Amino acid sequence: MLRIGQNLRSRDPAVEARQRWPKAVVGYAVDYAAGHTTGRHAHERAQLVHGEKGVMTVRTDDGAWVVPPGYAVWVPPGVVHEVRAAGAVAMRTLYIRDDSGVPVTARCRVVRVPPLARELIARVVRLPEDYPESGPEARLVAVLVDELADLPAAPLDLPLPRDRRAMAVAEALIDTPADNRDLEAWGLRVGASDRTLARLFRKETGLTFGRWRQRRRLLAALERLAAGEPVTAVALDLGYESPSAFIAMFRRALGAPPTRYLRHGGDAAQDPGL
Image 1: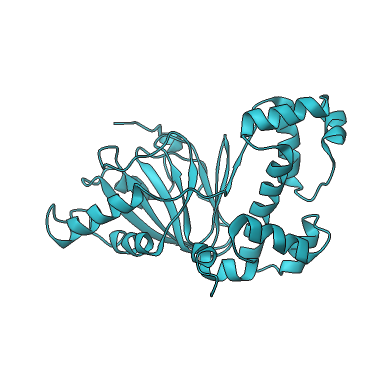
Image 2: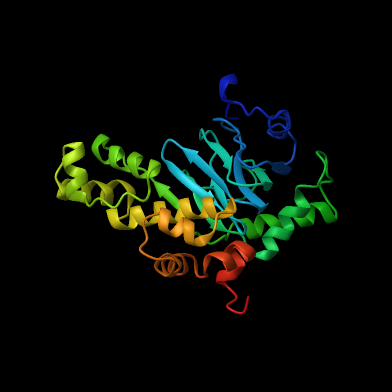
């Protein structure tokens, strides 16, 4: 079993206790106030960070992942991470042992959580430590395991480059996502040509610089909208010429305009009648 050093354990005793529960799939329900942070920690089990309401951001040394309602992020075992609540959050999370039958990748990734999986998670987080090996509880978990194996990926991650020059640009845009400087201007600041920076972003993040910056703005928008800021203010503060340009970007990325998306989570993109 993976062993986590004392200084990297969760500050929540209930979280630590669940790493040692006897079943391969266990759940935990906890509510966080706006601005709450878990601090940097790691788990012996894989974790599915999911919320019934509110928006969370998961940060690791490799990137950031925003988790609005209807989505979740897989965190592999041993990965040091921090969860921050953008607004009030109702987190309903799972801890998955490696013998559960659920495939977990070696890197964090955001997935969409369809309604059936959400309802199953809501039931499983209420199960006691020693739920029976057979009977309705075990059947419930078995169905959830099947659902977890096939959750669709979602474009809500922000991979970070490794090169110090590209990383300097990324960190500046994380701090100030509205900065509209082009790659030539960034290159003068960090000591690299625009072609070098373009190549580094594509190679080390899998995204062009333009798409990476747009992704950063989308994630910043999700956090701020979840905290209750109006769409117009968010759009202009993030460097868009008009709210309509921002709404068009948001719809292209997530399949629904901001207000409907936040009201209905991932289901808004699936049901145009909402």
